[in-house]
Image 1 (cartoon, helix red, strand yellow):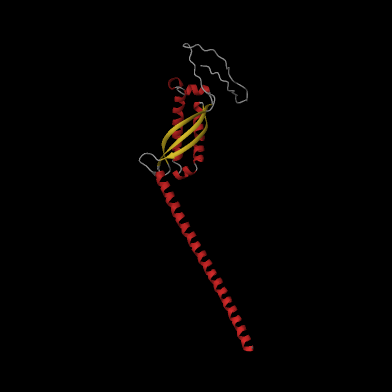
Image 2: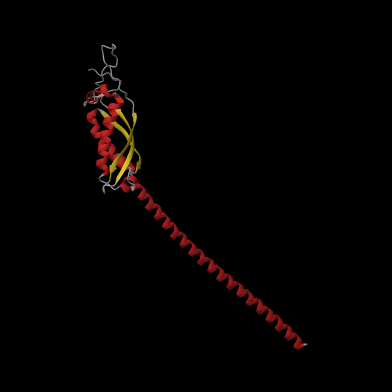
Length: 221
């Protein structure tokens, strides 16, 4: 078996140990496996997990990987039998599902959902360590979404609790605002009545003073 790759390789001393990139191929007499050197996107179908309290839920994952060491990848993966994508998909799914299940059992579902990036980064780091022996590197792992599994509604119940809490808080806030508005309105009405009464009082005083002046004038006349 020979590997020809345009990807540069260096040993521990930093010396270039890249192999040849040109070769000859005779169909039927020789076998050839072509592997991509670019990042490959792969979607992992949703699979079941359980959190710290053994609450069941499912998770969807999208990941990007690349061939790190072609020699190891060809040797470890059953590429001839299953093809490149089939062989890699089986390995990736097995590693991601196993490590994600172990990571999920250490946290509660709400914490996982609130900080899915940290959960995804943890899974990505551990998967990368496991993939080294397969000649693969996980470039990026992204948690797409969480769902309830069949026969369970844990996430739905959490959402229901959250909606009820928000609704209760909203009603309390509205009641407080309405009460404040009524107090302000009553204070404003009271102040308006006071101002009105004072104005009427001043008007009455003016009338009395005017009438008094007229009476005095009449008496003097």
